[in-house]
Image (tube, rainbow, N blue to C red; front, side, top):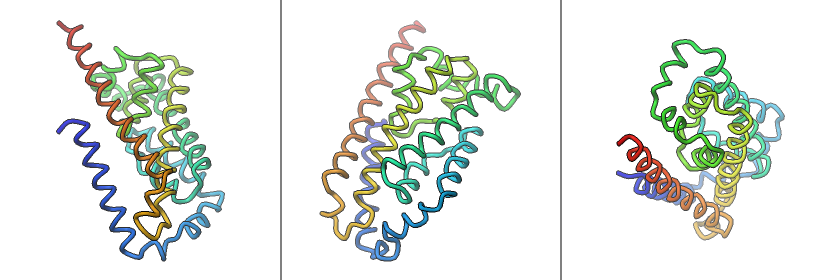
Length: 220
């Protein structure tokens, strides 16, 4: 199954889950207002940033925070919090791989992401692999550090790419949480955000395929 098919399947699953959620009555118990009360606690943002930092330091998945954070905060707040967590987590992984070293980091030197970054380390490439859905962020941090890619270029591409993705996710989630019907959930903000994410996934597939062919041609 190629990436376009996987992305289509993922959106279909999310759409089905949305319908189940709207029909279940759960939204009456977990309203957006109640969730935002949790987000009003100043420690909520700190915990999310700390958790993202720890996850990316050890190359663990942190994509769950792209979905959890919008439940607690408004889209702009979500974007800021996720960007800060991404910045600190990426910096920790990058500096660990570049200066700390050791067996844990060195085993990623032959990883396909590191080899990819060895050939494609421009700002545009770093931005692209950050903004596309399902990016292996922890491995990207390690690869950039091992290859000693410019930290300023790396961190700027990270914050901008992750910021765009976080804002799109936040808008899509805010548009559906608290809705009483599928028509309410599929407002223009939600549809626009989901459409943008779908387009990014398709572009990401096309770009990756093109880079793959370029790599294959260089190896010949």
